[in-house]
Amino acid sequence: AVCRFHLGQIAEAAEDFRAVAASSAAEARNALWNLAQCQERLQQWKPAQATLEQLLRDFPEDPPAVERLRQLRERDGGD
Image 1 (cartoon, one colour):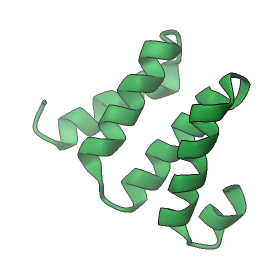
Image 2 (cartoon, one colour):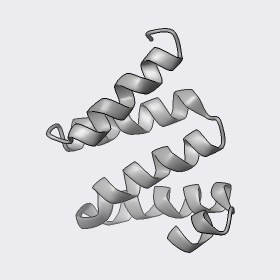
Image 3 (cartoon, one colour):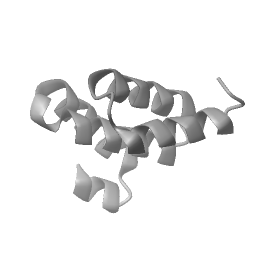
């Protein structure tokens, strides 16, 4: 998934990260974070927000996710 991301295969990488997040509790935090990054690159702002919200439900003490979600909400007019 990371290789696909760096090769610019963002949609494919997003699917890979989504699958990892669903199947591996140990990797879920990183997979969700990376999925949100893919969604942002694809300009899927609402899905990126939803992914970060899911990350924060599962991992509430994640300062980078809190900050990025705040930035996305500001970008989207405060939703």
